[in-house]
Length: 248
Image 1 (cartoon, rainbow, N blue to C red):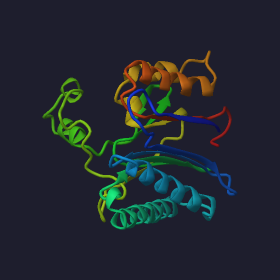
Image 2 (spheres, helix red, strand yellow; image 1 turned 180 degrees about the horizontal axis):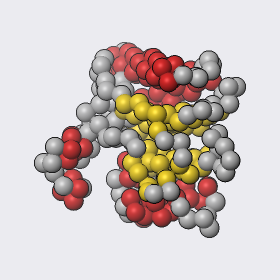
Image 3 (cartoon, one colour; image 1 turned 135 degrees about the horizontal axis):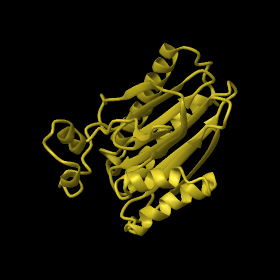
Image 4 (tube, helix red, strand yellow; image 1 turned 30 degrees about the horizontal axis):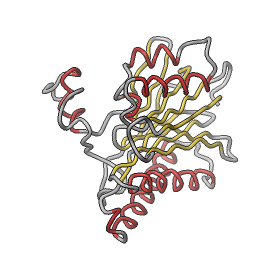
């Protein structure tokens, strides 16, 4: 597995509230993670950092994750811990009250690939037959689109396009999705909405699949595309490439 990531403040925001993590532990498992903080001021930055650090530390001490139920249990317990840390921190500091963060991640073991997410940061998988959004956004807009009450075009300018229905740290209870996915992908792309909210998916796919570019060039080119679209948000991208002949 080859992995590269980067984050950029964009052209409008005063702080970068995104965070990301790439790690491989002693079991040979990979973790990739993107978090997009919410709450304004420095609060979003604090929330995304707490989540990223908490999950990274747990992953580096993780026992072997050989069974589906072990991964499910580990992810749920670890995200619960991150949620509690952010929520407790917000209660002790009035300026950070209500802060939270999205979280999208993948765990790639020698036998399987798992994805999990809270909020609207996304994970895409590039298969032979298509570039597919594998995570489901937890947002008002996504819910309205699933119910057929809103088109993709209408969603771009909707007043609630940034309103989440789940996030880490904002509430005691949150929604988390976790899935085991088809391992026959070439690339996995994790990103904050600073990318997918401003760059067309066809363009993202074209860059990811461009064999003329190195992995780091693809990551930086995707961020540059977001900035050329106005850079209205922080943008974070992690790209994983499966090398021929192996899962990890």
